[in-house]
Image (cartoon, rainbow, N blue to C red; front, side, top):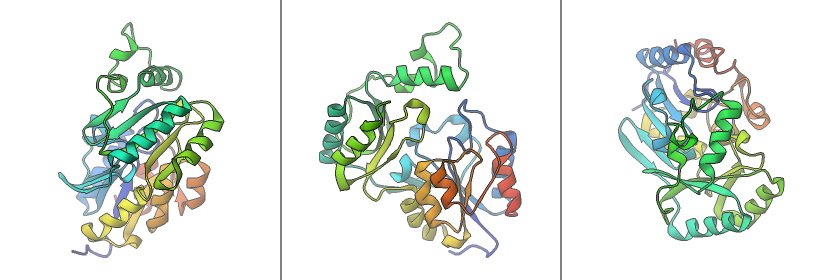
Length: 281
């Protein structure tokens, strides 16, 4: 059912948009989302994280739904309305390419994240170097932000929505992209501090933008009523399908080029300022 002409729907990225590298969220962001929803607007997450990877303190802000795993899943309220995953053959092909390239990687599924052995060590290093974590005498693998990336189970063979591979060899990205071929959608990693040659892999055609195009009629909005806010490579397709694309202050070049406008940083009231500009709060 169409909404009032002045109602808007907003899709918010998580990392680098709602929260910074240290997982901090500005109080103004929480206030902006809650006020906008109270004012009759609709606000959803649009993240590359798998459903189980969305931090509790982000989910607790309150949203009308979520696009997760870069478009692999989508929900409205508590109902899952979209699932675009890889079958066993695609997963096997992708894993073989990763193994041949000698990279660490993790698979993202609805029920969890499945890493290779070295992923948690890379992430612990990232938290020390870029997020200010000290670990305070605990082992890195015991840290609550690292523990989900400790290998505990056999990697799944199907129903994987997305994967991330990590590394520093700049040639790896091109080699992996070429080896995977047209059945996959491959973009540069959205967490570059985990390796300048990192990347994200989904099925061909699976993007945040494609998920938004599916959700808009379900939500009763047109593309012109939609706002997307993001900062990284997996937000490019989102900006292609919304009426207004807003780049965060530290957005990558590709996002800034696609954006209609920009806003301030994560902890500099970036979401709040964008919401004020468009009359949502």
